[in-house]
Image (cartoon, rainbow, N blue to C red; front, side):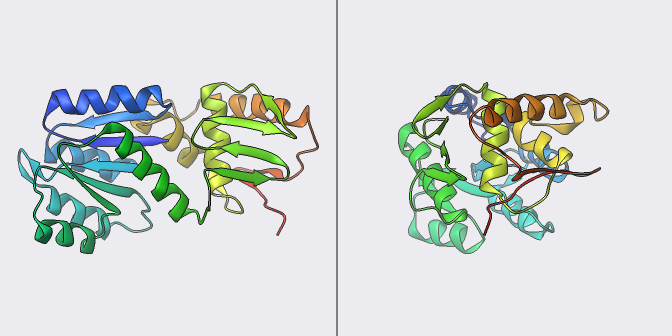
Length: 227
């Protein structure tokens, strides 16, 4: 998944990025409010990890701007040294999904992210069953009837994002944003998304028919839950 870290403490930001990068997440940085605004207005993110004390402005202002944007579902976790109850209440009422005071454990941050994913997608556990294919969100694994399916990191992220958004048409642009990051750095004419999807389908179809994995012509893809 695609994460934007908005944090002016560069050592902390890099430490978070290294930790989450090892967990398979795609990371972008913004060290000040203005650069964060530019990224948020262009890209969408699965998570925005937001510090409140930023050069050039307050994190609450950025959160307010994000919530004014139409059709945005970016989950926001506030990471800040401000531990007052009033600030926590203000952040949550402004639309943040969670509030983690500094200093914090990186493993706790990851656990909270997993909890938000479960809550957002109405999951009881970190596993999703889609036509007997088991998607293990926490451990980045896919299996069928107990047999592990060997996927590349990008193939897993594509399948993960499509499954979590099952029964919705996901455009190629949207898929690119969430798996590869900043769309400004990517050649929009490239067919690399289709190539990865083709390889993913080949691996899945080696275990069972996947007619539920649909291509929506000229738009993107949809995974049908069969409900």
